[in-house]
Length: 226
Image 1: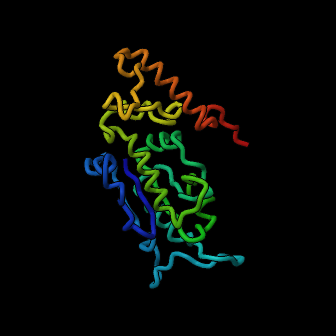
Image 2: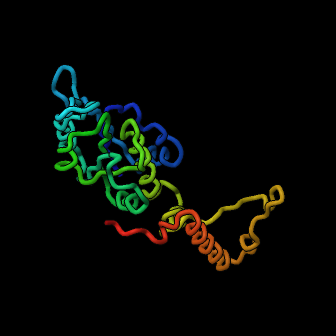
Image 3: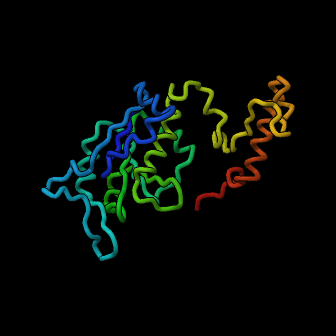
């Protein structure tokens, strides 16, 4: 999988993506990152990428010209995504969808945002990692890349690893235990020590359903989108 990233701060990448399983995936060539500096697509001596907003207001807005030029010069054909607090919420279903593409392109917003013509005439979708505002789209891009990279074949090592994770079936993951069997008087559930795989599977599914009911009931009965 190839991921292209357009940013004003290329030095932020790969950042934490260079560690752990994502780092191994990058080193093995299972995932590749192509980082583009937005200023490289400007043509004035000041390499200006932003300007004051029409109509007034605080802050600066990223100009459309360098963004359009950068995206039009891309190598891939996958979806173009703008990281924005106004976008659709990133969830595991979207992560799985993106993992099915051989490539995609990420635009990291900054300042007050980007010229609206980028959203309406260039990108395929806008994505947010939560209902809060960060200083830019770089951290959300890293989060998205980490989530998607885990689903690329070979990155996790075991193809079974993602199957029972939280949100895989609109359920949170079941509890996990390891040695010792008793720690400070707290014992591992007997069923996990029984060796009875069918009973263990039933227990895990029941635990996942109960945990989801208590912690995230919205996953069990999602509200329809208006």
